[in-house]
Length: 205
Image 1: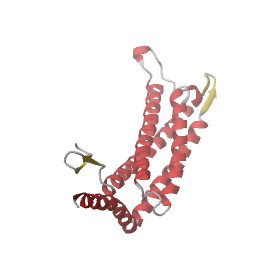
Image 2 (image 1 turned 180 degrees about the horizontal axis):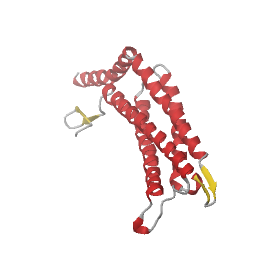
Image 3 (image 1 turned 90 degrees about the vertical axis):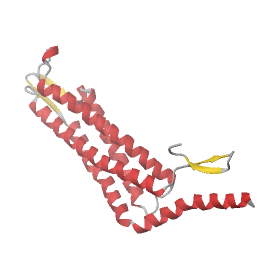
Image 4 (image 1 turned 180 degrees about the vertical axis):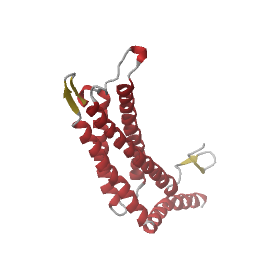
């Protein structure tokens, strides 16, 4: 009899997540729409940053320079391309009612949002550092500034980096939203103590 009650308790505990999920989905269609728009907005920004950087080259009496000559700028192009693809795919999935309701999908969104945030942030940060050196130079190692000779190239690269940081802002908000969805809709995983036949939360143990 005791074992039967235990199983009933586990079943009711496991089913609570699904009920909470359905209630959350039904009572907050506005949140789903807002999330879809937030995921869709970075697509245009990522493509804009990518295209601006791809077209960034300059030739004058000092020589030729292109984004392809700098590893940081190539990384920025690739990061924005990956981000645009993920943003479009995640927006399509998020727009479908209850398509992202299951725990595996919520966890997937949570993890990928965090990863993309840091990938794009790293691309913007390393490109900003390169631009700083291009504008200011470095007297300690006798590097002169390059932007005085390649002003147009630097201006376009700066525009691309600024757009990339605006993408980071969207992804910070998305990371917070996906964290909220995960940790408010699902209980922490339970660990069964075989000695006491009790369930305890997996977090903070």
